[in-house]
Length: 308
Ligand code: BEZ
Ligand code: FE
Image (cartoon, rainbow, N blue to C red; front, side, top):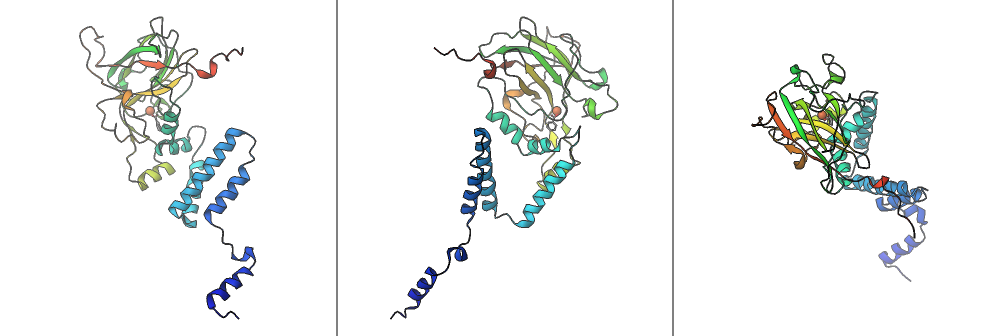
């Protein structure tokens, strides 16, 4: 006879059907979801799904995410999508203010090349090709500034026929696409390097400006008590045949937002002094900034290795 209470309990436990006592653990659910996606045919997509599921599940477990918080996140993402149209990409802005855009740049950086940074929502393809040294804006746009330098490969050899697609906002903090007072393609231009790889153009000294905060991303920044200004910069996409293009900025070293840029775009290697012209420099500008660009070979365009 066995009247010991604990032993009787454990015997009863043996007769309970497994599905009645089984409380699913987070780890079991994560395993089940991972297994459901393990048959994804494309190997890269399979890898991305697996990592996404692991990190999303770990986030919910670590934070003990509540149903109300989950719903608030769904509503926030819905509002983010609803804010998007042909001109406005609120999801990219969200990626920018969370540092994801900059992280993707860093993860994909080519060794020795100029560092890249965010493209931003104000790029317009098709800027007019301009003569070397030409002013990209109007006198009213700000303080005349010469930007100049060289475009080279990794070994320092000049890149001939490299293109610099540059754009910036006016001193009122607005790009041409935001400001009916500016003509189309104001403060934009395309420059092509000659045999010495050199370029120069006249711009205006860049100013800080606020990123758009009239949508869900603005709510997020206010909720986090974060500032919403970009450090003053000029944009450039630098490309050359056979090279990997770099989407980057030239930042003004004296700008107060270098350490708190709303979109985490600042990299030390992209910060330059905007200094008054010295003897020998053109006299028609108030500032000069020197910026060289280095491009890495485009791995994808290398000829396939010849098999022996
Ligand atoms: C910009 O520099 O144009 C920009 C980049 C990211 C978000 C908003 C603006
Ligand atoms: Fe910008």
